[in-house]
Structure formats: C-alpha cells, structure tokens
Image 1: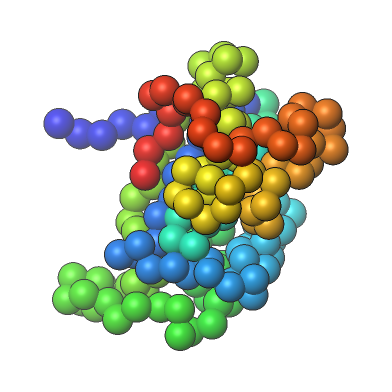
Image 2: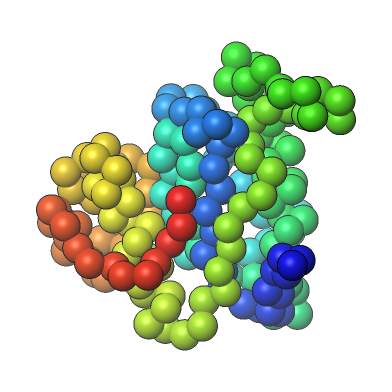
Length: 178
C-alpha cells in the first residue's frame, strides 16, 4: 500500500514533526530561535498562515493555512527543515546511521511527518486545543499558559481562551499523533 498525502489548495493542515530518535533538539531557547528564523525565511518566499503551534523538546505540532490556489506544504516543510539544519548548532545533530551516512544525510529530523487535512471548524478547533494542551499532556508544565513555545498566549490575548485554560486534563479524543 502506498501512502498518499492530501493536497487541498488553500486548505488548513495539522502537522506533527518529530526529531530523529526523539532527540531533544528544541530543549534550548537558542534552538527554538533558530527554528523561528527558519520559518521567517520560508514565509518570506512561500507565504502561509501559522494558525497555531507548539514546539516541545523533541517534536512540534502546528496548523498551517495555505494561500488559495496553493497546496504545496511539502516544499515549505523541506525548506524549513533544511534551513534549520544548516543554521542550528552542529552539536544538536546525531551521528547518522549507515543508511543516512550512505546518502550523506544529516540525522536531525525524522524523514516523514504526520499531516491531517482539517475538515471543518470543529476539526480545526479540536486540533488547536490539542496543540495548546500538548505541553501539559507531556508533563512539561501544569498549565498551557506556562509553556513559552506555543501560540496559546496569542489565543488568550485574542479572547479565545481564558488564561487558566488547559490546567489539569482535557478530553480531545482522536486528535493528533506522536
């Protein structure tokens, strides 16, 4: 069976990207800043909206909405990953396994990523909640507001969530993949 990605011009997509062997590449503020630089670089040449995002030590989740007439998230992710890899501290890179070494590849990101085309407003909202609750789910903080690498504060400032949302547990059935 061959995996086929969903491409929808102007669509909104939920993504999960994981670091090679779950290495905690984004454990430092400096690495997260380099990731921000990668996004700025790609956004300047290939615009899209980042609707929600969280960066955890070993993976990230985000929702993008592509411009109408454009379905090419794959190129954008390739460019983000390449830019980050070229500009991050070399100490973050793991020693490549034999297969990667034979292809002269870095060992930083897992090859594949998970994407889900968001079907409607309810699907979108559930995935935004999943993103913002993820640091709590992983035991990194006790409240979504406490995690610094998340779009949650922007949602609070916009009045979407109260500041104490995501304290404790919430039920977001069937959302996300890690």
